Amino acid sequence: MLRSLIRVIAFGCVVLLSPAAMAILGEGDKPPAVLGRDVENAVVETKAYEGKVLMVTFWASWCGPCMAELPRLEAIQKVAGKDHLQVVAVNIEDKERFRRLARALQSLNIRVAHDSMDGGKNFGVKGIPHCAIIGRDGKIMKVHRGYSEDSLDSIIAEVNQALQAK
Image (cartoon, rainbow, N blue to C red):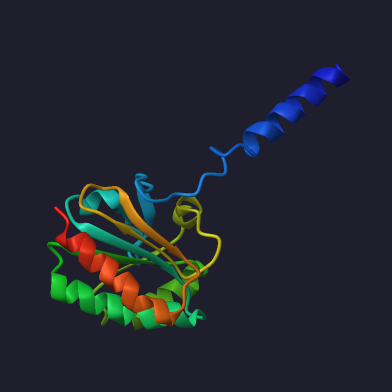
C-alpha cells in the first residue's frame, strides 16, 4: 500500500514537472482562447480578432513601462486601423482596481480586460510587462517578458512587421 502511494506521488511529480506541464508559450504556438473579461464582464477571446494582428499586453498601474506603453500601443493601433490591429491590455490587479483603472483609461482606444480567467497563467506570465504579438494566422509571432521602456520602439517595429506579413 505504501509502495503504491509512493509510486503515485512520484508519477504525479514527474507529470507536474514535465516540460509539457511547465510549457511557456512562444513563437509558433496558438495563444489561449480566453484573455480575460472586460469592464462589462464580457469574455474577451482571441478568436474575436482572427485575421488581424493581435497585441496582448499584461500590465498593472504600478508598472512604469506598462503605463508608458499603453498610449504608444494605442497610437500604433490608430495608425494601423482596427481592421488590421487590435491591442488588448490585460490588467493583473484586483477586480475593483481594474474597474477604476478602466474608467480612467476610457479615452484610450484599445480593448482593456481583466485577468479574471487565468489568461496570464495560460500565457506563462511570471512578471510584467509581458506582451505577445499574434499574427493574422492566429499564432504567436513574438513574446516579450520583463522589458523596459527602451524596448518599446523595437516591439512596435515587430508589430509593424506583423502587420506587413501576409
